[in-house]
Image 1 (cartoon, rainbow, N blue to C red):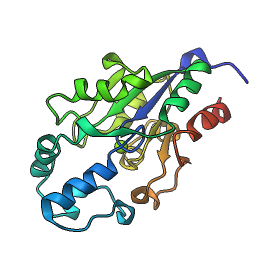
Image 2 (spheres, rainbow, N blue to C red):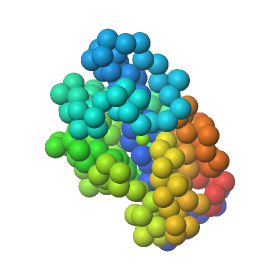
Image 3 (cartoon, rainbow, N blue to C red):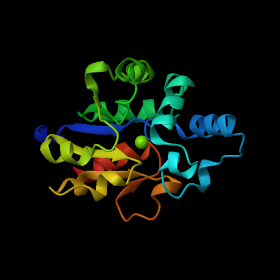
Length: 193
Ligand SMILES: [Mg+2]
């Protein structure tokens, strides 16, 4: 095992549908709200509000009202994977587009506490704000893992080379380096250094 480059010792991990499962609770919420059958396995994009003809503001309000973020579960392999990455010498940050929620940092820190990721390790992004811009500025980040392929498309500063897709049905059309579960991330980290 080679040593971590001290200048690139951070790994940024998306929260929703990377570290934690948002797809099942969102599908359940929409199913309840609109009285329709919803299966995220059929989603070919992640513009969920448009898919169900909801205004974005209404969709975000539903997420708050239904307390969806408060009740999401970590992916089963998230904890082991984060522990392995730390044992390799990496520090972990959680990058999440949850700024729409007034209690985003508190709720996210509660969800991620079992991973040893605290409020100060969480970077919040607004809707439509690109993580690629921050990634381009942050030379210390070895790579970002995210299920949203939009962060790949928006980048310009070589950041796309450091963006890894978490494989989900809605990003399968995009050519990119990808992982299929959190357990793949330490393996990739070892390959990339
Ligand atoms: Mg996500």
